[in-house]
Image (cartoon, rainbow, N blue to C red):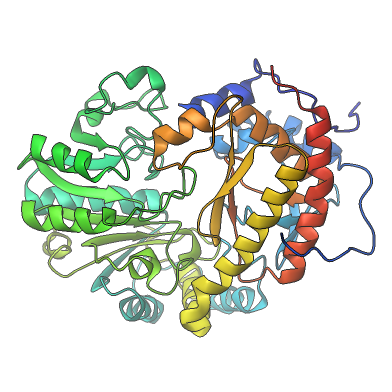
Length: 486
């Protein structure tokens, strides 16, 4: 018998979900309009619990992406979405800031996107050949992203990253890739090297480790990477000098959205560009999250930097499995020659291309005001959340530009300070307490990403922000009353 889901009084630190959280993330005055009614009872999830129990008999682990196990009290099952709202199978309504892990920049089920996909579905689902749609999308990308002189399409950003690394090594004849702690580049053997180095590997501050959160990887892959600290320009220079002539590329998230939403400090991206030019390395911008959320030109336009290769995912397909690797003609030369192989049966799938063309046209229609509009709404939400935190004595410190931001929850005894990189975050973030608050928010109808990231969509309105803060007020009160440090 499924009981009423209550906001927990304290985390079960021995449970599998919390262990996964700790492994991945610790080693990873606003105006509020009154709602007509206020929800008095927290949500319960009997159907989701029933479906999850059923799924364990047919789906390995019960989910199709391991990260979904982080959701408490149960991985949710959803029925429909519209705009900034989504409804689960139990009929619970949420104001959604998870947005398909950031892919739904346009909100849930926009009519134009659905029509574009449906029209193409009537013409054909897949040809494993060419169609005019891929020209339409590629030409739009050339127009929007200054460094996108040429394009190749893939099904996921993880694939596009792998192609970028292979291409950089072929182009330079070197084997090493320099990446930064806390930057996520897909779930492959290569993408997660050094992503969340546990504190036990921090002994040598000059040489960040090569930890990987998964077993079963090819161990030698880790030796193909040099790991550096984000927002430490002098450390980056020393790392490049240490491996002079051996590094094929430097890869980064222009804004470190996967870990605490940490923006680049003054000169950080310019230094990466400078070093790549000096040492014959390629600069790879992983804009899986930042692409188009930060404007038509992506974060590279927002921060005024020109990479050699760019990975685009999530918002480029609006929720369809679609990604692109773009680059300068020089950087893409070895793909053109065939020396760096890039292939895939479903690459440039017409359904995904139809979706992407609609999405890119929506971004273009927003004009230069796109990032400012999202930032304004996000900053209003951040200010409101901080006020609620202060009112209820909760050490929550929202951080980020606004269009995307993170819920930094200070550990007991930790003083507030700037979070410049992954290590600052790992030292400060109280994962267990954020998990508790996140569940309280969920049970009141506000949904953020499990790891603490909030995303704003083009479908969110001022009223959505006001409604979310009104619901969050109840969640903060419940959290403050029930949380105990253990």
